Image (cartoon, rainbow, N blue to C red; front, side, top):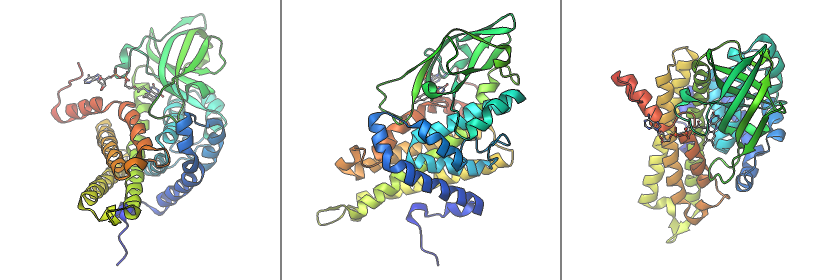
Length: 389
Ligand code: FAD
């Protein structure tokens, strides 16, 4: 019989199709060759070389890969998921770049944009020639975006946009910002190209998490936009929330990659690190940690495959996404912290990925709906009682 694979003991990977496995292996190879050797240094310096990487990610086919047409790959949900898994195995910042570009910015234009807006932006964004961001969160409104203060008012045929967005991934490096604002008709989305007078972006400094990722404040000071800057296809919070659902789906896969990377790093380290004249992998306490990690990685992977198959069958509901995001991010953080202990002092440096993953996952726990909010989504799904306010 075939040898057991310690990195995938239950052979969850066998549930993937040949095509999905091919995408997994291709993205893994890209991440291992192009990202892994440098990402510790990027994290330490607090940089992400987006301009250089975007065309390479475009060529790899992962920018808007689950969208149809306009230069996008049109992959299945599971194929998109496995790509996110392999990207985040390298770093959550890399996966965040791809999620924001594809699932938040491109997906909003694809779902709600005019034909002209789609032609203008999507082929360039799919190829990585143009970078997008998605501005929903504000300094005073995160979990509760319905009360946002950013406003757009009509002035003749134009719009005038004012307000501040905060914590915006890719903010200062974007060619186009998808910005959600309150209007007299309800929440609408606007496409704001960089360089538009009155629009500026300032980077957030001092992050201890997701350091290999650009996070910015966006300021709109009476920004005049033409009538065709508005996304015509949606009014109301349903617009941004539906795109967030797509990005969260990528996260529930991505975190399996980060968790697997921590577990396999700890496993390799434990087999070669000698203390008290034997590999630390031979101590029962170490084995218990490794086994717990392995169980949780495999369960999270199974959850991801299940939700991916539901999504491809058109049966995925928001509560399913909340299930995956809550469970898999939480599992990944626990695994990362436990892996760090196995690496001892080496575990605290950027030479190994474990504390970088653990720190990154703190952001992943908070963005795209905090764990508390996903708990409330699930609480309402099973009890019928809403507990938000
Ligand atoms: P708050 O909403 O103030 O929450 C603080 C705490 O209160 C949390 O623990 C929360 O769970 C809890 N809480 C709030 N309401 C309730 C309730 N009803 N019941 C119980 N507990 C509650 N946003 C974007 O729009 N675009 C981006 O690209 C983007 N990128 C990000 C990148 C990073 C690195 C980070 C850290 C954030 C990013 N965000 C982005 C913002 C992110 O979506 C918000 O941080 C998130 O929605 C939480 O909002 P908040 O930080 O304001 O926390």
